[in-house]
Image (cartoon, rainbow, N blue to C red; front, side, top):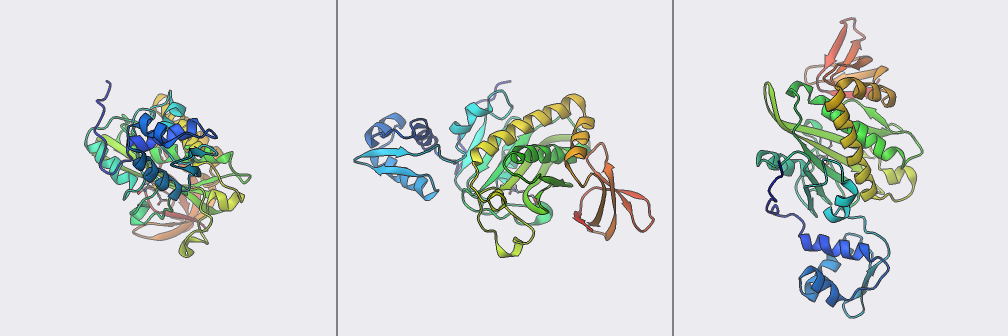
Length: 337
Ligand code: BTN
């Protein structure tokens, strides 16, 4: 059923800024007069000037000024809906893209959208988050327009107990999306950490609204450190960004497009063929799938053991060193032991 066009959410990026970006991007290297831009997007020339200043503050290299006209040197790396939509055609994610220059948490927004009846496939993107959330109540640090903050609303016909597999599906998509950007091969540490050379560059926070036997909707929140050149001191030893790893800037726009295309593919594979192909792929690309010595820390205890594959629901199995057999880990922290 086609969804009604929703009213823009409070705080969402003005569609005319989106149009301004698209106009500049489609005419990159050509000088366009402020008056022409103002006419095309339906605002005053002063407003165009204010928005250009705003884009410059975000790192978009707009040359020129109101009298000479404006141009950009290359397509700006802002995750603007109009720049994304045509690249996502054919996926579930091309219809509803909500973009914010700043918001508290894209997951919070997407959960509200889920409650309000927003359809499957809606995307929330932010250039910056003021209260980004990580797993286990942790904070997810973001730097303006340097990383990817993306939440995807899904309405899968699966029991809530199988929701951990959504995190696995998203992890595979992130892994494949960044693999071409790096020379080192990315790894996935169950359940939600994306690593390169042992340090974390991305994470996934899946939240849901469910009854015991029915999942109403889930939000898959994906955070990727892309162009940060430094990370806060307290996480420098355990975290990294693609730029820190490769020594060069990466296009967030390209990565988001690839990420959502891979997510669409893995999600459809999961719904069509079940957990088996997903777990097979996870086994291929995650060094944590089987035979890894790990320390597991849950709310109840901390113990060491060896990983022994995943269950159909996406839960990790670990054979304990203390002789108490193999246990299914529903949630907890996993570190290499
Ligand atoms: C983790 O590794 O602990 C999960 C981090 C998830 C961060 C992303 S950023 C986009 C989305 N919005 C949030 O507030 N969190 C997720």
